[in-house]
Length: 156
Image (cartoon, rainbow, N blue to C red):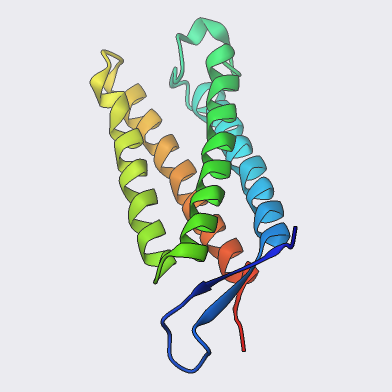
């Protein structure tokens, strides 16, 4: 199985094909997953330990919180891998894949960001959780977009 895939690009100045280096795309996606998980961990430490805001559970669970912190980090990593799969699919099938990817990631980020406001947590916890989700979504969106740009080339 080849690591390169092509799709019609519909662009001018090329033969209408784009080459995607799958290995490069997916190693970048894996690195993005690690970054997303670490953002979650560092944010929880800062929010809980430094600012004293009890995100992801009551303050009695300490600086790292409880299993919810591990779950957040795993979900962030999984979201990065799913974003990589999405951009890969869009790159090989869709004209203007970055445009669609940007909209999809933005809408999912907004949905995840407002979710804390549906709970009965304190307002500062809701705001902190919202901000944490936005930062993770922005990181995933920008990093995966950058990785995709580096992994795809117009085929001459």
